[in-house]
Image (tube, rainbow, N blue to C red; front, side, top):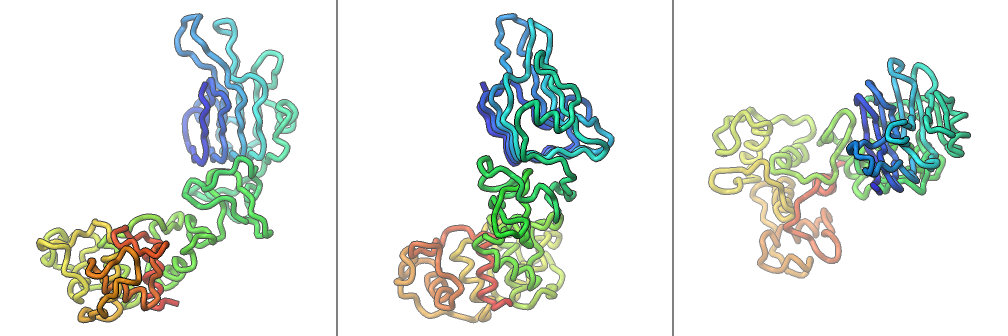
Length: 389
């Protein structure tokens, strides 16, 4: 009696079923992408029979009332054309993988060698390698499901022109896709946002995980266009907006903001900070950051390159990068942010950052000085502090 929800998964190159339902009651299988599944047996979506043990008293119920919507199946020509299979076994008096019909709609079935076929082995409900039209009639559903080439990219995302774009069912649409991109998006540009079929929502944004509706989308794209960042992944292009910024990453961001995207620091010596050897991936940037007087490290001769940077610390580094290592901000008043009272760490720097219009705080009259800086926030800080176009 599993009442589970299976959503936003990419299942690829598996030997047996992409998604199998066994004794599942009221299960929801929504917005999954299944690619080249069932290479050895079963089918991409498979209604199986449970064999807990051979005691005749053991319960082996069929799946009941599953909802299967917005799923994408794409199989290569070398694989069997079976896309859905409902099993029945004569053993132990007869065991069925499903009772009644599933609720199915807005799915996409594609096989590159031949049309997908659909099989139901239950007595009294037989369908053997049926066509999609026969399957629609058989389950009395799938009216809005599709059978065309989904035009998948190598990472399972939808390419321009994919029939899966804006073809999903809104009632079952998750709030975000597998990468955290908000659903639904207006993928086809008709002015109406509709859920896509599959695990990944199509977006016209530069970064796959930064939809146009993201609060920092403009700043992130400006940071990219200025050459300050290439994102956190190139294929697919991602930015990781919610990831925290480390002290090593911050050194790169600020030095590029100061000197331009083409800037390359001198080679590292490995002698400046105990925890930053010359072989460390950002050693040259960290040592240059120190050479320009922006940082003295985290204490004890260390830099703590992998530690996250806080919003209070970031205020100091940004203003030193903008105005020079000798810069000293005006004294704080203690009246700008509720959580930055007079005398608190970095209060002068935080209030000056606000005075320059680089930050308005974190909301509610606060600055959240001890919170880690995210990559999205970093984009805003850098674009505003260095007036990036």
